[in-house]
Image 1 (spheres, rainbow, N blue to C red):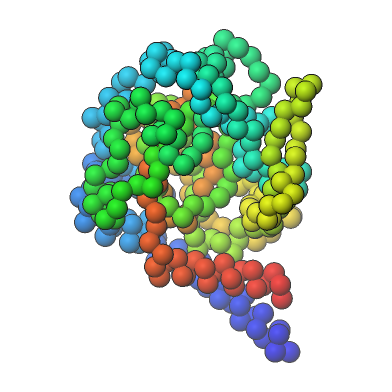
Image 2 (cartoon, rainbow, N blue to C red):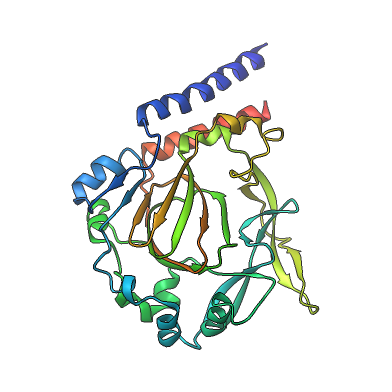
Length: 317
C-alpha cells in the first residue's frame, strides 16, 4: 500500500510539474528578436528563464554570409582532409536496430565531400560534416576569420567564452535525432535553412529514454555498412522516438508533450537553451556555425535532475 501511495504521489508530481512550467513560460511559438540584445537583456529575458528565441540582424556583418558558397569553400579548404560523418540512412548518433549507432567518421579530402554535395559524384550513403569538439577552429581554421571566435554579447552575459565553435554542412537527408545538450547554444545559419523541433526540459516525463548498446557503422570490403558493437563501452541513454512520426501505441505519454517547431533561415541565429530537447532537419547544402557555452549547473539543472529521477522512479515502480 505504501508503494502504491508513493507511486501515485510521484505520478501526481510528474503531471503537475510540466503543466505548471508550461503555464509559467506561456510560450506557444519561438519568438523573434529584430536585433541582438544587450548582455543584461539577453541574460534576464532569455538565459535565466531558459527560453529560446530567434535573433535577426545579429550576424549581418559576417563576411561568411556573402562569401561561403561551395565554390569559395572549395577554393579555401580544397584538398585538406577533414572528418565527415557517413551513414547509410542519414541518422548519425541515433537508435537503430536496438542499438545507439554512431556514424563512420571518415577522413576524406574536403573537395571530395563537396563533389558529393554538388552531385558531381553519386553515393548511396549520406555525408555530413558535423564533428563537434570545435571542428571550426580545429579543422577549418581558414574560415574562422569570416565569422567570429565568439559572440561578444553572449560571452559578456555569461562571463565566459564558448567551449566549442562548430561548422555544419550536409545533405538534406542528414537528420539529428531528438536529444539534449548541457550547453547554451547559439546556432547561426549561413546559407539554406534548419528546421528545429523543440521540447522544453519540463517535457522530460513524456520523452522516452532507454539504455542502448553503443555501436558504430563500418564499411565492409563489399562496400555495405556493418554495425559493430562497442563491447567494452557502457550503455548509452538515448531517445528512440521519432517526434515527427511518434508511435503513440508504444509511447502513449508522448501525446502529452507540447513541441515547438521553428525554421531558422540564412542570417538568423537560434538561441537554444541548455537542456532543451531538439530534433533537426536541414535543406540540402545548408551551412551553419554554432557556439556552445557551458551551462551553469544551478537550480535549473537541479530541477531537471529531479524531474529525470522522478520519471525513472515511475518506470521502476
